[in-house]
Length: 373
Ligand SMILES: *Cc1c(COP(=O)(O)O)cnc(C)c1O
Image (cartoon, rainbow, N blue to C red):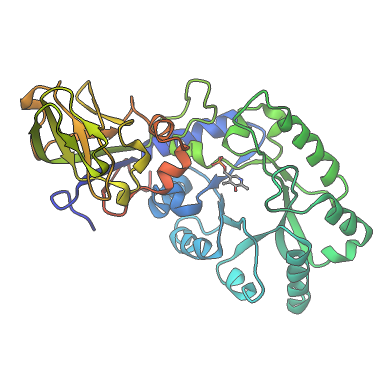
């Protein structure tokens, strides 16, 4: 546990906002079951508190990327939502069959090899095994190709012993409403799944939910939007902000015109300036790319980052803030309601997903809102 007095920054995670976001996504997809994608430690926000709160809100369908994440999640959910389904996006490797069974994880089968592995596992157990089939409709990353599906259609025996609970695919450009690939993927998904045994279907991630009910099918799989990331970057964000980050000022320097700040001397003062050094850096996942481009807030005042972001420290020009408002021990707002994860990501030339999943281990984490509702 990192305590407030020891930490260089305080990360606050609002579980009521997580619950509100999940409720909004459920409401937006009335005909479908709303699952929750909680891979990568719930996008860096914290798997245990997030999964417990979502379970309390009624979520029973969870997706992780890796088996190890499923093992942890099963322990979290066992006492509070024993009936939860935990799906593993990357699917099974040979030798992991028993581990899948032990934590009752459902494999997502992405290739003919994974299908063969799971079908032979079912034969060995003489018991049908629940699984999900993933079809690639435009990502060229994971999933069955159109020719794989031809082979399955020609030889249905390859699926013997499998109880297919869901057929899914994944959208490549869902955050762009008008991208024609969305509709092309939807049509291809319908064509390909028609050649497989009938099963419930799932296509939409967070952004896909906002493309309309034609994309919802039987289950939607939001991740990012649960954690406050905007599903439609070009429109106003309907999601509530989940995280807030404040960095502690540990020293204030008064510098003269022409003095430089930080590594590489990339900022040169054009006037006498006050520089606040905050105990957050790229070692905390605060992007190095924010050097001389990002900013924070003190009260309502914007304070620009000057110089490079270093591993443990970032320097802000606080010359325009009254001295009483910026003293060592006080905090600078790095992420809040008006300067969101998406805003920071834009300044750093990346996406909110990367900001969240890199959130530092050195922050003091405070969860607000009840874990169990
Ligand atoms: C990560 C992931 C999701 C969730 O996507 P978001 O954009 O975070 O909502 C859904 N489906 C698959 C296959 C994924 O890999």
